[in-house]
Structure formats: C-alpha cells, structure tokens
Image (cartoon, rainbow, N blue to C red; front, side, top):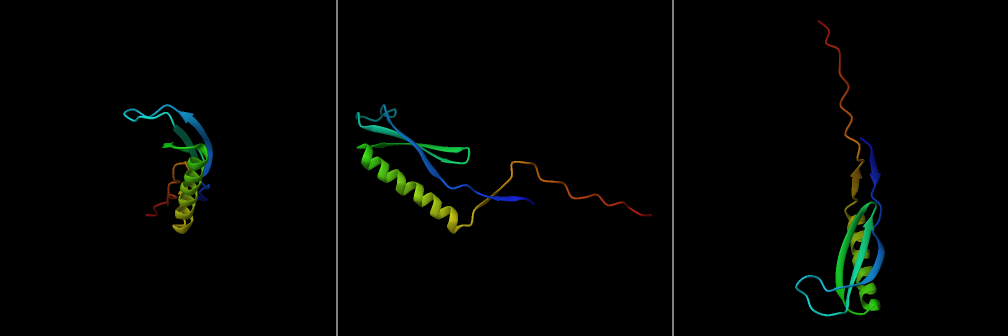
Length: 89
C-alpha cells in the first residue's frame, strides 16, 4: 500500500472581513490555513498583528500534532485489489 507523508499546515492569508453572522464589531479578520488542497477558514477579532500571532500559534500546533502522531494519509487512488490465484483441481 502506498503512503505519502502529509504536507505541513501553512498560513495562506489574513484579510479584513465583515463580522460573522450574529457577531458585532468592525475589527474582524478572516484567515486561511492550508494543508495540501485542504483549507481551514477561521475568523478572529483584533489587530492584524495580534491575529497573525495567534494564527501562527494555531499553525504550529497543527504541525506539532501532525508530527507527534506520525500522521500519514493514503493516496486518493482506490486500493489495489489483491492478486487472484488460479484454483487447481
């Protein structure tokens, strides 16, 4: 079975955003963290500098957790079926 080492998480962007539904304030930022083609989107309130520092801590925690568990993921390809054996009568 083929395994590939999972890519690390990385910060993609931090941008100003409108407050999420039901929230107040005009100091919201939206961030994107990616791992391969997977993207995590989150919202934080505060200054860009404070949010950037917090998101970097999140990215580091994701990567530490991934390394400590030795995470691997399978290829997106379906598994190869086992070989068929001829039945001899």
